[in-house]
Length: 239
Image (cartoon, rainbow, N blue to C red; front, side, top):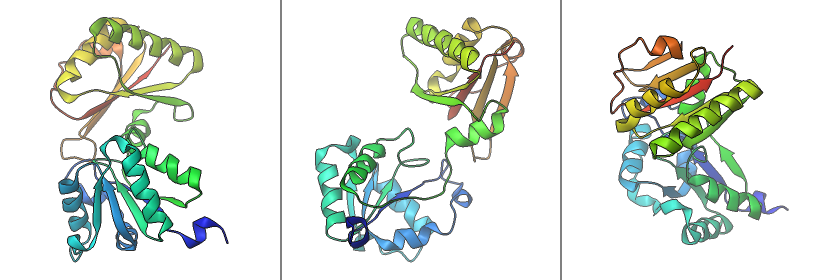
């Protein structure tokens, strides 16, 4: 009998993007949570609060909690030992889906290498939601995480992404710290061609959600109001 059938399973548990968006989490997650006895989380306090919202009867102290902490060897060993001993383990990130722009991917990699069953569960992903609503190419796209902090390097990277998009007819996706939203948008407007399209998706699944795709030339005519709001950016060369 294979190891994955006799040992524990690794559940990848998605978390809401906004605290008031519990409706975006499917009910079937409760069964997976109940199966787990060990959780690896980015923030124990917020993870406990999240799970209690999903399952009010959950007795939090009946479970073992460990911090991911960039998924170092200690966390990997903790997870593998639990799986080997037949315990189901859950990974929870602060927002969105574990393993997608998230340190949890290293834990998943270790579980795969050892032959344990990995179970991805459905939930919100800002990358997927923004791409769905952008009107850009969903057949070919790349996610780049954060762009360089240095303004010169950032503009250089934006130019590279635009060139890649034009060459591959692909959507280029990236994020930024909320207080630098206006800086990165201004850099995009100063760097990209007028016909290139920019989508800014703000407050996804939240009460002030706004997803807007316009040409660079049109963005230049608009007033920006994205300061300190969680956002994701999509770029696609046009013309």
